[in-house]
Image 1 (tube, one colour):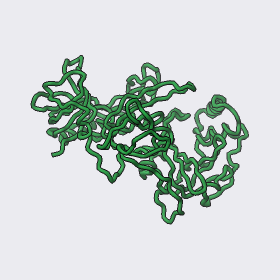
Image 2 (spheres, helix red, strand yellow):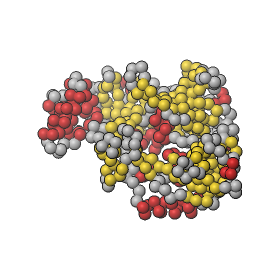
Image 3 (cartoon, helix red, strand yellow):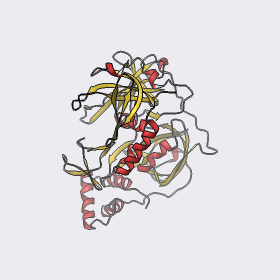
Image 4 (cartoon, helix red, strand yellow):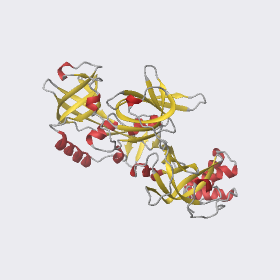
Length: 443
């Protein structure tokens, strides 16, 4: 059987009219009966049989179809389509306790549109093929299902998405209006596309919506050299920006809404918007240091003041050999401890799948003094050329030694431009810089 555990679960829920709680309880009873010998797929199959929910009710077909021909009576289909939009990727806790990933694509042809869902590792197809709005694709072997009375597709295991296939049919593109930031003049109900370099990211704000659900918004600033605008990223894009983007990244935004802000117009990202990170552009966007000239005060280390934001130019004289990686509980956000193969949160008193964080620090000299510059998250990933996902299970002392030796070979003596906020270290009594951006100065 080629159905995933999630797909079988959805069929059971639709056909049985049981609640999530009732389904989960029945499944746990089945798993207990077989003493851990059943996988999630197997447990769901056994539950479907117990409830007399048919899983093999569809007509098998492998023919190519157009969207208007897709109905729940079909099993799997293949089709040509264009991408309408790519919403934010979602993460969730799977029923076996692991972290799952889900990515939706909305695709269309001249006969209609439909949602295609990618699960887990399939979500990598978006970035691996650099898929974007209006790209024409061939979807090979997609499972057909019905959810909330709507027909949808899910890519099967072994299914494919082929970008720019040979001899596709003619499918008219969606007209997309791409503007420079300076060309966006007033609020409008018509979505627009634009691009710029991120020059600041503000903390995410979490709140409760009118329907009682938790939502969040994160504001960030972008500039293309012609103008600077604020962008409001609403759930789920608030998480995407916080986790995947950093100051200095170029971002291409599709289908943003233009609204009146307190002082100027601003862009709003919602479920139907799409983002691309560091895309290929025909227009040259100034480097971050050029865009930030008016955001930070030019400073010298000997004159730094606590709480002020500065741009410093100096030479790296030390790469501090710190712990590099730390882990936090996804539920309570406190530090967790690595005990062999398990990460334990003492606050929650349980093993967790932690959030991986990285940090690093250097010391720079500008001839008037030496100061420590500390980097976190995407900033240190980009500057040290590392990926936090490589350290989800920790890092050995030998690997850490090798990394720091390499960084010293590559970075010691390099001239850098550092922008950030100065903070007094209560423990050492020294002024340090919390880095917003760091770039090597061009020779």
